[in-house]
Image 1 (cartoon, rainbow, N blue to C red):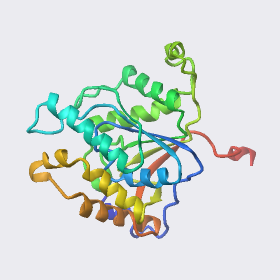
Image 2 (tube, helix red, strand yellow):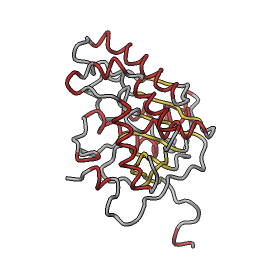
Image 3 (spheres, rainbow, N blue to C red):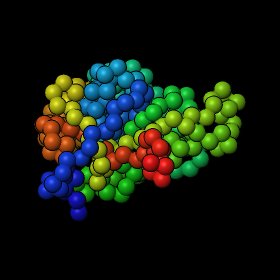
Image 4 (tube, rainbow, N blue to C red):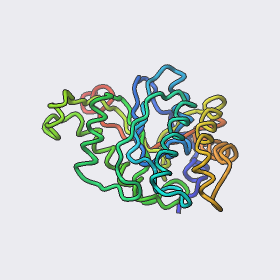
Length: 263
């Protein structure tokens, strides 16, 4: 089982590379409200401070996430907390797809919804959560997370093919093949990192703190955002050689520059 120290690169001998930041638009795709806030929001705060445009797309409203609250009450509450958390890191646009929390289905319907959003927002970077069974520190990943992460990866490529979901053209959505990277947060074996030392981490903490009712609803598993995110970011920072970081497993969808056989 991979430990957090392993994932953070302790003993690896070399630091992970920084995620390239020569881009302008990012679409962050998550299964539930609060998923982005478990670390990745600190990276979002860094990017919005650079003037980058980041949009949030939530596949569900998280209505099954609070044991003591029925779904028809939990959904609107968690949506409001997500919008508040997004504002803390400079994100103004938060969209919801209304798939059913806890039973998100893999298949064309979900992928079409994601392709639609990618064609509409035309991101160069798609940020999502790990789709593997194990996440960082060997934690078992949740079913919706796995489905959404893999669907986001597939949609990032399908968005550029006019013959996949051609009906989207009737909505005025032309193909978009401009996604360069798909970045998976919480991955067991990250490949890149983002320095979030200082203000980005503070804003990320505030973003998770906006989910106060959800966190309180965890009962015995409830936690304080500041110590949790500070510890996590410092552990990850060791992999990047900085004080605090967020780590990602980065998939490139195209070669940067000429392909290796032409160099």
